[in-house]
Structure formats: structure tokens, C-alpha cells
Image (cartoon, rainbow, N blue to C red; front, side, top):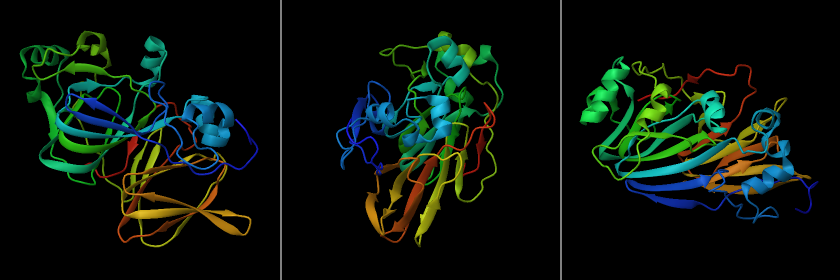
Length: 319
């Protein structure tokens, strides 16, 4: 790759869509091997995320991410257009995934962008259950009786933690997650067409009742893997990075904004519209977020310096 010492610039990527029995997944930004998003424009256009990571290392993602993830871009962004109902899944934690599969685990955030009349999110259990009870109800088709069922509203957000059984129906979700698609199918609502992983994943399941945390305005989630902040832009906002700098992802959920990067007495501008994702490399540590429409909302994704290997704090709207 040429011009390795040139200043990097914000990047938008070409989406990749995958059809599922229940709807469509569109990968907005992913470094997964089988999905490797390609930059759309600028002098970095035509390069994939993995190309960029191999060449620019911590210049792309910052010191914390590079220390923990190396040349793997640490998060992915995708949308799930769920027209039917997904199967019931569970994700492994980082330690189990590394020890068993030489892979990353998966912590995810679901942000609701559209909710149909039959919209449901199944997150964990409505009460503490036993392993035997869960297994029996998966086998006899009554497992829904145990699940914590939420009727989501647009703009609500939920952490899907490792060990939490989860599924969704009649809803459109924005998923911000650790760069991993390692998950296990536990139940498929009577369908026998797809492989089940119930026995393989049984010891990964958290059988405790789901508990919502108290919401704090603005902040949606803070985990070791990523922090997500909801920005309702009414006026220009300046961001200045510091020690332990991080990449920034801006996901526009409503309206339109422009990211201005000061450069030699002028400013380079990079627009981001509803449904788009813009990656700001870590070395760009001084920028302005400028709304172009009333009601513009951005989700800002970054990685904070990690002091603890585990632990999760959700500070957003749990619905």
C-alpha cells in the first residue's frame, strides 16, 4: 500500500448483505474473514479493513485496541431486518472462545431502529431457571415460557452479553458488537432444518434471571469491548482525543451530519447520512461533528482504556 506516512482520513465502507431464513443481515463494517468490508472512497478507497489494519496498525485503532486485538479490527456494525423470528442463540465469552475455538467471544449491543406490530426481543430468562428445566423445555418446544420477552420501542438499546440466550422477531436492529460471529443455536421453534448446538454450548448459558440496569441519559453502553454514546446533535460538537486514543465510529440513525477534520488552515468534510457508518482512524484526534438536519442522531463507538479484563456496565435505555 502506497503513501503509508500520509495522514489517514475518515472512511465509509461498501455494505455486504446476507439472506437468512428470517430476514436479511447487512454488514456495514466488519473484519471477519468471510466478510471484509471495502473502503468506498479517498486515497484509501479499494482497501479492505484487514488491508488497512495490516498496514496502519495502531494508527487505525489506537493503542488499547491494538494491544488486545492486534491486527483484527475490534468491532463490527451490522443491521438485522428480522421479518420472521431468529433462532434462540447464545454467545461465548472471550475466555471460553479463546480456549475452545481460538476465536474472540461476542458481546453485542442491539439498538432498535424499527419495531413491527409483533416485535419481540427475547433476552435471558424471566426468572432463575435450572439447566435441567431449560433442556427439557427446549426438547418439548415450550422454552418460550421461560424467556424474558420485551416489546421494544424505536431508540431503545439492549446489551446482549455472553451467556445470555437471545432471539428477535418482527424488528429491525442495529448491532454493534465485538468482531466475532461465534454463536450457538439452542432452539429453532420447531424447525429441524438447521443444526442445533445445545449440548455443545450448554455450559456457556447464564441461567439467572435477566436484570435491567438504571438508565443514564446519553450513554448507551460501556463494556471492555466498546463504549457507545448517543449524540443528539443540535449544534457543532468538538472531539479532541488524548492519551490512550481510540478509533471512532459514527453510526447515523437519524438525520445527517458532517465530520470536519482541521487540515492546514482549512477543514476537510466527510458526510454521514442515516443508515451510514463512518470510521475515524485513531490518529485523527481533533474533529468537529456538525448536524446538517434537525433531529440528527449519531451513535459514537469507541474503545476506552481497559483496566479490567471483564465486567460490563450498561447505562442506556433498557426499555
